[in-house]
Image (cartoon, rainbow, N blue to C red; front, side, top):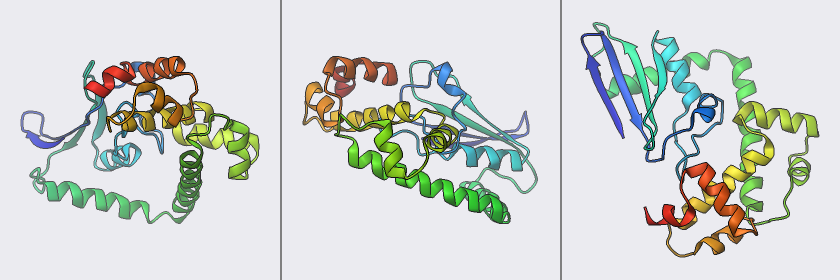
Length: 221
C-alpha cells in the first residue's frame, strides 16, 4: 500500500508505505537500514530499498522512520519539506528518486563497492536457493562455495544483512516455508523437510519466532 499526502500545517509531504506482514519486533528494528536487509516478517519480505530511501530522504532534507503498528503490518513514513515546486504527485516522487540515484552515480568508487556487494549477495542467494532443501548444508559449505575466507565471509554477511550466516540461512529457509504454506499444497511436516529442517517441532518454534504465529495458523490466515 502506497499513499502520498501533504501536511500543510507542518509544511511536509508525507509518503506512507505499508506491507502485508506482521510488524517488526523492537530488537530487529535497528537492522532496518542495513544494505541488503529485508524486513523478513512476511512471506516475501518488503521490497523496499530502505538504505536508498534513507539517502533519498536525507538528500532532500527529510526523514524516514518505521511507524509502530503493533501486531499488524509494517509502516514506513517518509517526510519531506514542501516547496513551491512540490505538490505531492507520484511523478514527483519517482523523479526525485531518480535524481538521488543519478547523484549516487557520480561517485564511481562507491558504485564499484556497491557492484561488488551486489555480485556477492547474488552469489549468496543462488547458493541458498540451491541448498535450501539440504539439511546438512553448513556454514563451512557456504564459505567454500563463495570462495572466501571464513573471516571475510562472516564480516560481509553481517555488514550487508545484519545477520550472522546461520541466522541469514535460517531466515531464508523460513521465508521459503511461508511461501510453500500459502500454496496450501503441503502440511507443516512436509514444508519443514522441504526447507531442510528435519525436526518439524523445531521448525514450528523457529517459524513462530520469526513470523509471530505457528505455521498452521499462518497457512489459515
